[in-house]
Amino acid sequence: MRMRNPKDKDEVINSCTFFYDSDEGFSNNNEIHLEIGMGKGNFLLNMALNNPHINFIGVEKYSSVASVAIKKIRDYNLPNLKILIKDAILLEPILAHKISCLYLNFSDPWPKERHAKRRLTSPNYLASYDKLFKDEAVIIQKTDNDNLFSYSLESLQDYGYIIDYVSYDLAKEKDIDNVMTEYEEKFRKENVKIKYLKAHKPRNDR
Image (cartoon, rainbow, N blue to C red; front, top):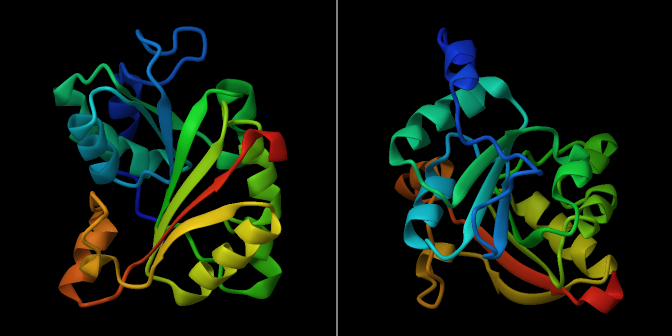
């Protein structure tokens, strides 16, 4: 269920100073990582804090959710973090050939088969991501949903991605420097196993 609009949503959004502008970009040439579906911003904020040498952009489709993230992020004044309120399928004019890594954290699983094309690892979305990546395409996904995870593994491989790492219980992994999202913190407390994958597609395959 989509969250209700916070009473101060419009004020928060109108006062935001770190929306991504394709003309201005970032003040450096560091690589750019993109999170689609940033939610309340916990993952995005901590990734930017932990990795000052990487630029981060968070995308959120719903302004009500984005306003919560803005309030969480704004006091940090991080030069390597910006956001967009946008549908993921419409990012090409803004981010064409600029992205090095894409994060898909706890995306809507769209469980009904007739809605499969809305899943963020469906072929139509993967085709749109092709236009965003600067060089090699890298996608990292986390989800609690078994069916979405199975679908994503198959869809990515059918589309030409090479699966580099798969985990069916991320909490047990020692080799992954994991930053948790709000959902992940909640699921961990409920002993829900988190699935994780990392995949890449060479530039000459796109």
